[in-house]
Length: 425
Ligand code: AMP
Ligand code: GLY
Image (tube, rainbow, N blue to C red):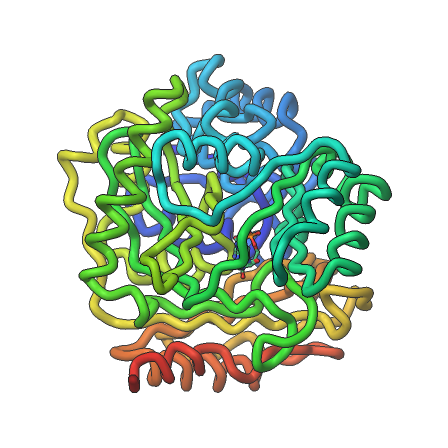
């Protein structure tokens, strides 16, 4: 079979490595891929993940049997709709279903209409009305841009002055472009956060192993929000009892709501949950695999990934048992010094060879130049180790992360510590 994967980060590398395990896979094309992905797939760097027409032409011209659209932008732009229109089976939601991530107003209204637990909220398209509301609100409060904003469109003002600055930045200065035409202002929730990714064909659902992201740049969850500095799986806060509650009050009602709205969701649905004192609530939905959650979740998948994805597309997921290993996985992101602010690129990456068998390096931001791998992004590598338990996985991930070198390499040193602490209480 010939497969096509749209995207070029660590998440896509993890998907590609897993797809490779299926013996019927001959070729995988990655559009655009990256330097490290080139070892596992044929990368077409000239076609970006948002070049929908070029992606469709490429798929038609290369006899693609199955396509996986991984990032949010092409999903929201209708890449899956277009591939389906030319007869190519795909994994991923169509544009209508992708609104569950692409519009926070859509997802908040969906949850309100169908009684799915989430933070109380108001929607504003007029900055004056938003400000009038904020003058009566209690703090902290949460201000979110409606549209896609690279995970950065969420601000948590601690007082009225910060709230006024947040509204000005999103709605007037358009810090996130048209994503900020509307905002959601919502109640500040507290409790441990859990990411649950789930395969779904619109009706049946197979939740994956739970995980925990580390979004802030600095140790102790300080500093700026990033795309994610590391992950662990499973998340010890997510007990079987909580999983049952989530299935009944969140997962199945969300699928039913999407069907009732005429946009059944097929693909990977990501539930960003907060385990509040009042029970689990939805912080956000994503219409895709998380990055870097995928880098700890897929290594624990025992069932063949392509088989699962094909069952999602064929809407036969209910007939398949999706199995997971009992162990743990940890991923430590190696970033370019300065990220998520300004950073330098073009630094040579060395000492990637000879790592132990339970360690996999997923490439997120690098390119090949005359046989050398050079850094080309903020998040450069995700170093994942699997082990019998979280402590073992973390030890091996950090040992490998210490060995790999590039100038300016930066990593958090406390990935997994909160999870370990949660296991002790
Ligand atoms: P989001 O992009 O919606 O996942 O938000 C990014 C981060 O902001 C989340 O991972 C939470 O840590 C935080 N956050 C978002 N919404 C809330 C909320 N209602 N209460 C508390 N924290 C929140
Ligand atoms: N790691 C969070 C996300 O993928 O949105």
